[in-house]
Amino acid sequence: MGNVQPHIQLDESINAKYALLPGDPARLDRIAPYLENVQELAFNREYRSLVGEYKGVRILAISTGIGGASTGIAIEELHNIGVEGMIRIGSCGTLQPELKVGDLLLVNGAVRDDGASKAYIAPQYPAIPDAELLFFCMEAAKENGFPYHIGIARSHDSFYTGEESNIYSYWAKQGVFGSDMETAALFTIGRLRGIKTASILNNVVPYDGDTSESIGNYVDGENLAMTGEKNEIITALEAFVKYHNR
Image 1 (cartoon, rainbow, N blue to C red):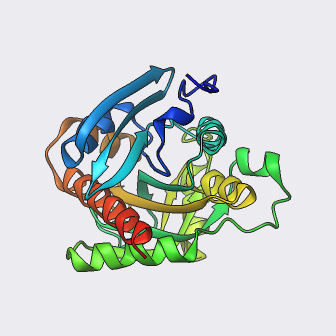
Image 2 (cartoon, one colour):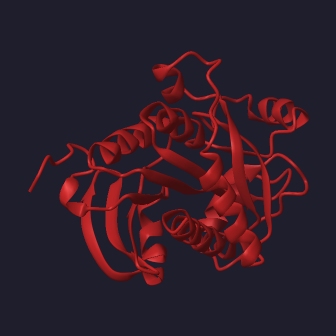
């Protein structure tokens, strides 16, 4: 064993340059069928991990939990064990009517309305993905015929401030496509650490829909949101293969 990281409980012997970052540990069960030679690795706190191969490329999948703070820990510790590229495969709520349930949002920039990214650097610093990795995500979604949009996401820290409706309305007017809780931290910390990052968000909330109700349906059901999840997994895996073989 090498230098085992304290939270993710992994070390350099994993030998993976690329990582998928879902939020939910349960999503690993739905990633695993797409990989060959799957090996479950660790499950500590919110950080569950497995590794496998997709079209000959070794890929790690690790859950990050909810929010920028826990995601930031995963990013730093993955970087410490040699991971060079990370794609978030998460969920979002739409702020624009054209983003339907199950559609993918390929994020080309994030509003840093979180605390984790601000702990690293002044808020004027942009939260943007790696252009090449974003391009490969776009190419993969297009080739597979998945419905997708490219646009800005807003990353935030709470669903329960009591001001959500006003906040969402404000950012919708500024052309922001969707809301999540992790992308800004991924883009900001990733850029500062020299990691290639991208974020693919599956919209699970109907336009003007109720977030808590939609997330409940998402966990429970076979519906459009589950198709979107499958599509984002395939898109991210294909993007890593394109990046690896470029």
